[in-house]
Image (cartoon, rainbow, N blue to C red; front, side, top):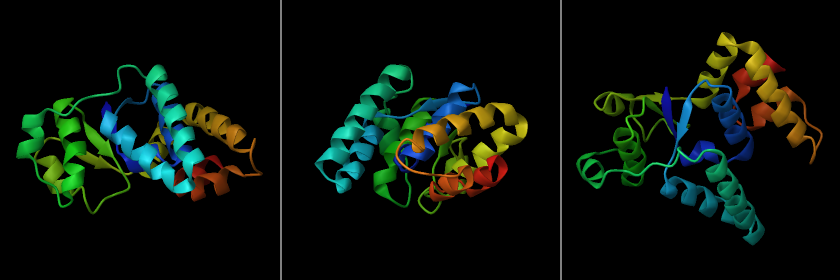
Length: 177
């Protein structure tokens, strides 16, 4: 299953790390575009210059770790598609151009299921997706959660449930917590 990761799930860090951990376990193939990565870097700029610099470093590591994940939107596809937010048409075009199965996003309003279905795509909520992976292979998702929690605890004192709830992954947090 190939899924385009919207910018809103690439940034924040914990959600991205859990999603990519699941991809690393073979649950799905992640896809994105250079434009989506740039949106992530610009969003991190709100934390200050160091936030953007850190994001650009993380993006470089992401590109190295997932060399086939970066896709381009076919300009023809982008021109013929429509979504409520014109800025999100690019995400849909990347999904269509790369023959993805769906788009992982928390932005339900701007990705109506009926419009995605017209293109043979589904909108996937990250918490629902990851909880489903946990139901299918709990040991694999436990390993992902343990690794992400250990990394987060290098800078704080988190519980699994608290960390994943803050990352907008409450169902997964309850399952792993």
